[in-house]
Length: 272
Picture 1 (cartoon, rainbow, N blue to C red):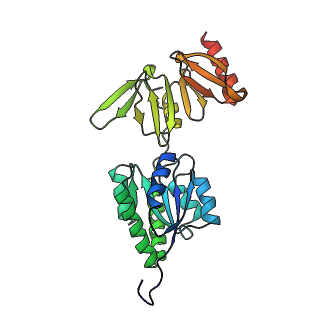
Picture 2: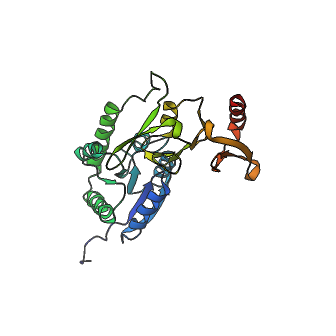
Picture 3: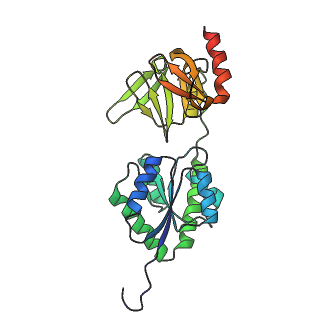
């Protein structure tokens, strides 16, 4: 360091993502940055709000789409004037990314690449060193205003009744999955895994949305992260800690939330 120059800024960084693997990858890269002195992890928007209010970081890597409070809701709850610098973490398509670019807010796309993360960190570091706090507040405010104006109305159940097929998009094709072939559905981060025999295709939706699309007489929520096809249920049996599990015809064992046991038993008795 040259004589008389200021010491380098030491960064306090908060990582907010509901996916444990994503948090691990981010923290692994950030831990190697010499000027990052503090890294805190949050798995939900509500937890992030509490940390930002009590232990304000310099920089937040913020997942855009999370269950409950998403990234935009976190900014709105904290307030742009109190929100630290933000780098969005997103798996959104290129159109959403372009919207972030217009507002000059940095982002990193999933799956992560170390070089891109470090580049985003460097940009944030420069913005902090340049004292551009007011400019960043204005950009966050503009982003919130644009998001509120463009947010779609929550999807309603199909007017024609439950869907008979779900659309699964892959890199090279679009596949139609008949719902009667689905054994069970599992929420995994920002996706839903459709367990169809030996296959496990994924769609980028919430489990609540998939539940709306399917016939409630056939597909039932047995846990906050699990939806099961009743036609695939063999029986219920006691599990650990006085709980119960749902056993499917292929031997798959799924955890049953205690509060849902009576409802599932009643549905199974009706189908006998």
